Image 1 (tube, rainbow, N blue to C red):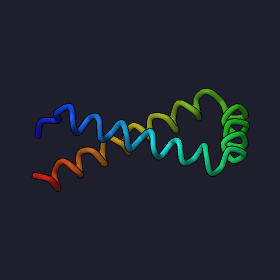
Image 2 (image 1 turned 180 degrees about the vertical axis):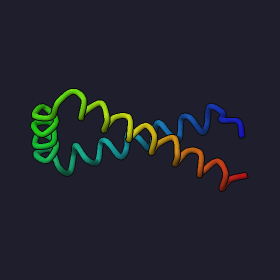
Image 3 (image 1 turned 180 degrees about the horizontal axis):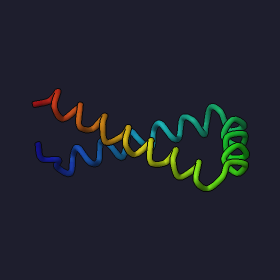
Image 4 (image 1 turned 90 degrees about the horizontal axis):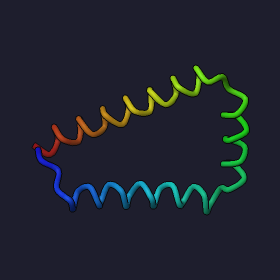
Length: 68
């Protein structure tokens, strides 16, 4: 499956909508989350980031297989 500009623009737009909604609807929760992240060790933050990347790759892979 080849991703074109349209699909990349759609993905970027959906990401911005999701992040914008979180910031608009729960700004205080974002501050709490940032405080929690500051309290974590660098190693834990790195592991969370790697798990998020792995989950994202898995979702993209599964969606690609579902499309064809």
